[in-house]
Image (tube, rainbow, N blue to C red):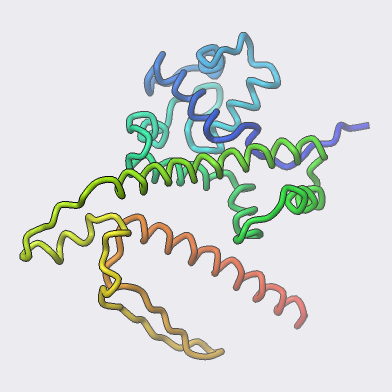
Length: 241
């Protein structure tokens, strides 16, 4: 009888994945190396099951890249490694890496407001995950979400501790784009886009000035909304068939 196999998922959380990648970077920087050498830098004596699972996870997070038997540290990983905890560049890079695994993006879309481990496990089992794989996937997902929250808290907390310098009045408008989202005035002017669909009008309102962090958050939320609308559209189309 063939052994049951689960859909692909990262076998470790992002924090451990970054640590493993950093071990490779310290030895060979971004040089193309064999997968065997990369595994050795991480402490594996051979490319056995566990080593292969870790290498696969690093690829799913976008921390390693390459083809065939060669691999190297990806630019996204260098951004994370090169910046200290709380640095906005590191925060953004970690958030990007956390969103790369297809399973994690799927879980974020299905449970936008969060869910219990039991609810996620039940869903994974219906998606052909065997129980042990479901448990491993949930643990990696939770650890990754926790890292993102911790890094983000460090960034926002650091900004709160510093008194922002007041720019000259002539630089007020241009400096808004460089401020953290918490310092953008709540009374910032709004921009509005309106257009019509067959089903009715659509109105899209946002502050006319957004920080890079707010823009990223808005883009992520719009993507979730579009996924919901697509599921509804697909369901409606299926009913009509």
